[in-house]
Image 1: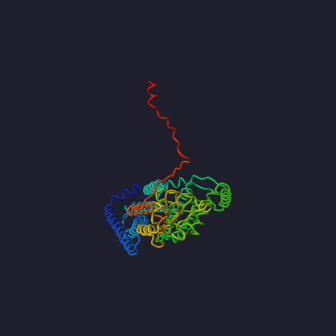
Image 2: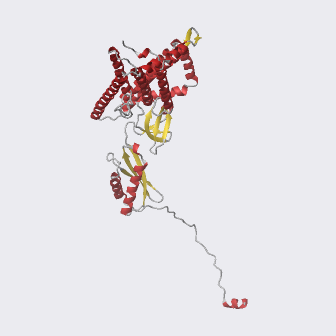
Image 3: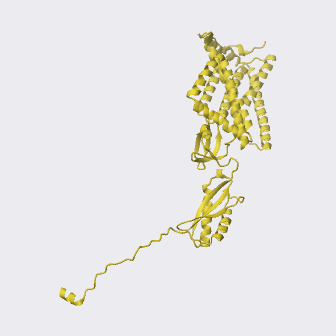
Length: 449
């Protein structure tokens, strides 16, 4: 006679754990775990080989495989499936079960924890709040497993079902609310998992204009999936979705009054991503802050200066104000520096030497090449402007200008070209007359004695 201990109480389970057949179950469970680990190892090796052939590198740990062999979602899911199959086979063979009544809830809890932790880490990688949420999910999952194994959970659910209250025409119990909340959380985790996977697939290998288009597609897809998941979660909790019409009207009034700036930023974000007027990697100047765009979200844009400072600019500002994009149609940027030389300098010879010297500076383009212009007759000397082009403004402009100035200074010293100092010419109107006393004679000196 076969006995399924999943319907027995905790004392019966303890008694079953003392049977000699326990060793058979332990051996089968060890084989299940070993087979699951081997399958994960083989699948991970196949995936890594495919990525190596494609020249791809994983930016963050995989949800399925995790960082190590057994900390992803795939291992507990495979172990749970194989354990369930082994349990059915042992029941058909007439084997009394005790270990598998403990193993299956443990593997189920582990799968729930791994799924939630991996999905939340992928969806919100820099959120400190998610760490607390992950720990809460782990405690709840393990507590539920213990209550189920000990047989306390069914009794608790029956008691919670007795706590009821009426809301409008509906009658809700505390059990319905808890089960609905857990269902809603599971739905949201699955939706975040799908959106994270689709976003990673869309953004893989994209750059420039393609990256901007795929970014807007990923943001729109995530918003749609979260909205659908929210509706499913509310339905799972037991909230009547027809009540959302009132909520939608109130939300519209709130956007019209207090949330118009926030709504404008979101709309502006989609406009920027759709029009591709600003793209990730562009060098822009907004309000005197110049840097490269590192990220474009639906609400704000991150601009990183060469000094390492980052500016978070609301998307509405990028739409309503003038933005200097240094690399929209052409990444080449014109830079200049000013040199002052003596009036007796051979300017034509010096121009050719300056062009040759600046052309040898790294990062200075040969086409279009440098140009030298006599820009002004200064009070102290001739002012010569040196113009040159670069095509990598994201690497900084001050450093290449410094290299050009150092090369020019070395040229002037080598050729003996003078760099004039400030000079002033002072003229005096009229002759300078000095008052000189008449000479003293000798008789006058004697009389003075």
